[in-house]
Length: 135
Image: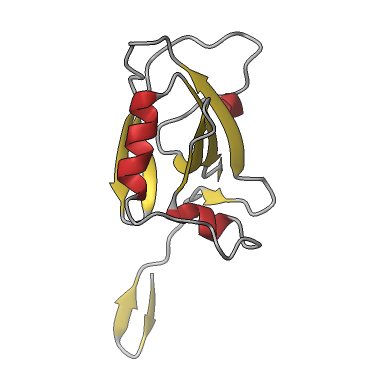
């Protein structure tokens, strides 16, 4: 503890490490997911402001040769979606991620379109923004 002008304050004995996002590590990943026709994806999406957030992913075992960046993860922000018919939707996060693209063609109904593409597709090519925590 210390004192100045009659006030007492405490000084922490240790520093708490707070995970931070590293600007050096790339945070955009391509992820391709495929589902059998007529089956549910098991993925829950949520619109949080102008972001499309992955809230739930199915609990499936991944192949031993698959890396963590090849899978959709809870907390990922979906930047763009393209299906096997080349139908595409960009989310508002796309414009903030692709600084060279001033006209990102963002539909005012982007979340509704994104959910529709998920429901009507068997293969999705996603561009995902992921916060990588450096402990």
